[in-house]
Image (tube, rainbow, N blue to C red):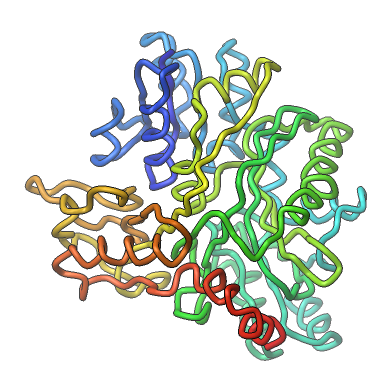
Length: 432
């Protein structure tokens, strides 16, 4: 079959690459795509919010299945529009996508259906939010209610920092309309992990878990980003915990969405924390995670085209995975996640070979050479026997880039899994 992927980043590059490996897929299209994605898919540069042109492309080319990568088209109703045109599309409707589009909606849903998550309050008033902060103990987790490209969260240790975050969000200066309403929730302590699942109504099929590194600095310090790297599997999260998370979080929320008249189809992403009381929800997303997709899909051995079609059609789905570990490291523009420059040449990407790979997040071709066009530029990943070997391979591949001083990246992706080998050290960092 012919398949269309909506999006233009590293996540979509990884999806297109996996679909090209699928025997069930004869051709891959990607809109708007990118120069790098055009090496594995046909791209015309159609705006993901131009639903009319996308439907026209699907009908003209005889595309049988569309997969939506980013959240913005989902929240804008792309799935509803395709369904009105009797086209097969993998993703949640506009009503179901609210589980990501509104933090308040997601928290209220979890509260109503007793799905474990952090205690919270919502605010539209700066004064009310500040008074609440003054009455509680930190650390404080402050979230913009709407979509903020994965960066709408501030974790503040002290009251002053929390109040500054409240002011910048609710005034509209930080995230615009997305931050006009905020959620302040209790800080969850424990081990974080990402659990994605293929969902169709009450059918929930979990993928292998990953761990994302959101902070910009080594040792998980500094500002939150869209993600500086990820790895899969996560040895310090027992399989029993994953099973518990599926049974107490992923399946109940899918059932809750059906009861609420918002039946969810697509990828349900659970950002979870393993606390002393068990797994709890940090956030839900309505699509594949980024950069988790870039390390999870390379481990998938099943035909992705067949899997998606069977999920949509109610057929049998069984996922097969390699036991190898994948580590992906984000190469970012200097200054990211704040002000950064683009147009910087990336020299040496063609030297990344063997067990290593490159997925382009923010690049474009200029005079036959790739240059940066975003904050997160590429993900360089590698497979290995365990986190340590996979990370070493990824770092060796990174070293082939000749002008690394024009970028920044973390050298410690997967460090928590490596520390897990020394249980005393791991327990110390947990309590610290």
